[in-house]
Amino acid sequence: MARRTAKKSGKSVRVGLLGLGTVGRGVVEILTRHRALIAERSGVELTVVRALVRSSRQRRGAAGRVPLTRRAADIVAAADVDVVCELLGGLDPSRRLIEQALRAHKPVVTANKAVLARFGPQLFELARRQGADLYFEGAVAGGLPIIRTLREGLAGDRIKSVMGILNGTTNFILGRIEGGHSYEAALAEAQALGFAEADPRLDVGGGDAADKLAILMHLAFGLHVPSRRISTAGVVGLSPEILRDAAALGCRVKLVALARRHEGTGGGIEAHVQPTLVPLSHPLATVGGADNAVAVESEALGLTLYQGAGAGGLPTGTAVVADLIDVARNLAAGLVGRPGPRLDRAARLLDGGRSAGAYYLRLLVSDRPGVLASITRIFAAQGVSVATIRQERGGARGGVPVAITTHPASTAAVARVMARIGKIAALRAAPNLLRMLT
Ligand SMILES: NC(=O)c1ccc[n+]([C@@H]2O[C@H](COP(=O)([O-])OP(=O)(O)OC[C@H]3O[C@@H](n4cnc5c(N)ncnc54)[C@H](OP(=O)(O)O)[C@@H]3O)[C@@H](O)[C@H]2O)c1
Image 1 (cartoon, protein in one colour):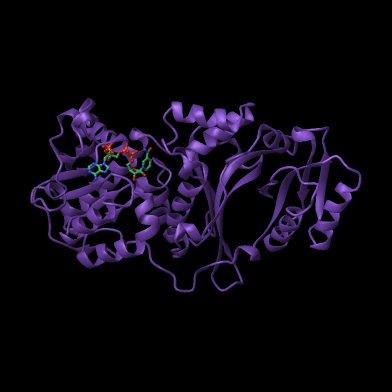
Image 2: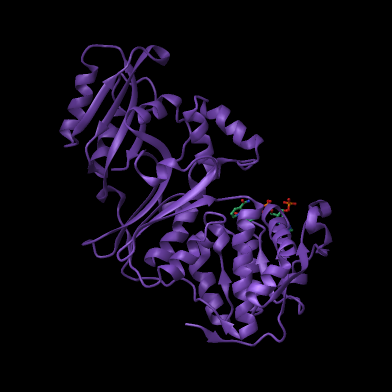
């Protein structure tokens, strides 16, 4: 519910930017290019009065005309800044500066998933106490309006599941491996094109997607868990052979982040980030390049899909500017807008072993009689039903590749299968285990 706050006189709202990197420059570019349009549509004029930088090399394009400062206090504590826009990235000093701005009763717009995934509840509570807005559309899936959708469009609906491709870098890499490139070559190309971070571990290890999933879970289910508690596997080491197997099974491999409500478990939410075989008939299968997509299933509306550019200065800048406009309108009206996402005390993370799914497993084993039989015995002993098993001709290191798919089985049972297979002497390389979306 909107609450009253000190009304901002006049229609001009002054923005202080923390950071003038990729997204910061995108925001300045959009505010400059669409100045008249924004004023006409929203009734407010947004002006960037100052930007915090470490060096002046960010002076490019429209950002070249923004006054710079190296002192954060010139923004978070300045009397001539109405709204603080945090686009530094990382945890520190971002979190501290967001807190300082809120304590000074300044609304904050941020695209910082790392800070929100870890400290979201504390920051939303601080914003509530201070009577200031804290908006974060750019933090998940770049330009896609998924936060707005969950907070507004679906405000009256009950969410059953949220599933998405939340990291464009890994989606790009998977597309290149599908085209026959090695994982290493695909990653190098993503880095050369500027998709991947200089240190890409957060992308390829799944941590970035887990941070975004944590934020979506908070919104969709009122459950806040640190992203390190979300079972997470990345795309490191996936080979063209795995993607070919997926194609033969009528699927494509995607790094899927999934959170799903389990009815009858007293608020249990299943959540994981995993490379997943997605059937070609599913909308997520066709999401190509560095795009993001989120599929939301809710009780009344059913399945809806949001797809587009999940990164980049202008796409993410669009989301940030939309938040700035909302916050500026609230200021002009003397209101505090949407409250932070609520916490549902009954919601809890479902123990990973209690979920179920079908799996694909690829092994490299010694070419000896009886090996295949011993593997199938392990599955049978754990009650995991094998759907298909295929042995190929000789592969790397003198081993024989074996591809197995299962019928839906409990994750705990599949974990026991993996533990036992990991001990068989005939194993020549670490096995690959992927989920299958059914
Ligand atoms: N890029 C995207 O497509 C995208 C998409 C969605 C969300 N986001 C989020 O948006 C935020 C910004 O991302 P970005 O891609 O714009 O990052 P970026 O290009 O690295 O820009 C961040 C800028 O902040 C500056 N900075 C960092 N710490 C600073 C400090 N203590 N004092 C002064 N300046 C400092 C950096 O300066 P130096 O270069 O000197 O370090 C850099 O210019 C992050 O939270 C990111 O997760 C980004």
